[in-house]
Image 1 (tube, helix red, strand yellow):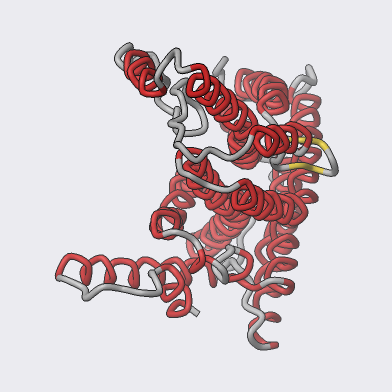
Image 2 (tube, rainbow, N blue to C red):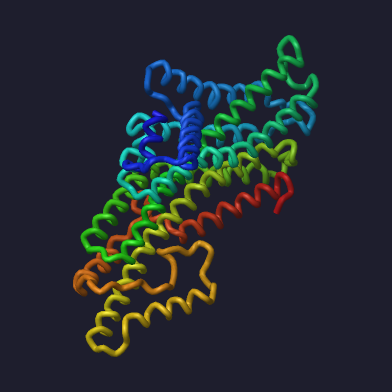
Length: 431
């Protein structure tokens, strides 16, 4: 599977490789193999019956079995106030439900599409070299991004569990040897937390990865307006991008909606229990609850930010097409009236660029530069029809008909951030 992925990421007609290109090939091969190997222990492998059974068995043991045993056996209601775990039930339930939603989504993706088709690698060879290399780089760095989100959460929870088991003494239940029993249980509980957090963030990173490919295609698509392109070519390319965005929306809509509902309910439930006057709330008892809240909100924001970004880029095509239509119309009237030469348009755009007022994220889709016009510009009627099409066919990520744009992102971000800060203020004193 890894060799097929590497083959797709390379151009069909390759020139004779030099030393630097050969080194790049080796790096790509190594990174792709590590990416595939990293996915195998959480991304389901349905190549054989026993591997599928093993994946589901690990899921039930680490996501349901150990958290349930942890809550029933190690609730420690008779321990001293620092070692009691009054919020362990809601913490384990929230994280396990998030991991269950993620695991079922991954299972569905693995059965229906497979890794290559799911990541849009089957037709990547048809894209330009810039898109292929950009997506290959993002594909290689996605596992590093996953580690950036997973490792801090795991290390924080590991530190808490090590402290809890090492300072609990005889209050914590054990079997036979107190030290060996605590060591084994602590390792198993940390593995359970790592497994659940990894699955949760994995689906979010995969969603971000698939959206990134469409971002690259949109940047490439925007350059068609700067060349002598036909309306049919522009329309076909835009229809292809809209189709991929619709496929992504259809695949992830249930996951995004379920995650949003789960995170919101979990946040309100957490606030309900920690604001109880009788609750024993401090870092030792509610630290895991705060960490779980941060994990859930971070995973949700990864998905919402990726969706809002691709939606913003896709809708910016309308303004780009309108600007292209206006520049072409002005240029055609100038040529007929012979009043202002078309070459005078370029210096104006150059003067705007010298002000350095563009944002860091501006590109071909988001800028105020005029579009270069060529002599053989397509007719006014065709340009107007294309602009009208873009105005009435806005693309983007949707969830059951609702477009996930920046307005939705800002609204959800404000609500979830307020709830998270409230929880952090009540648990660990951060406001």
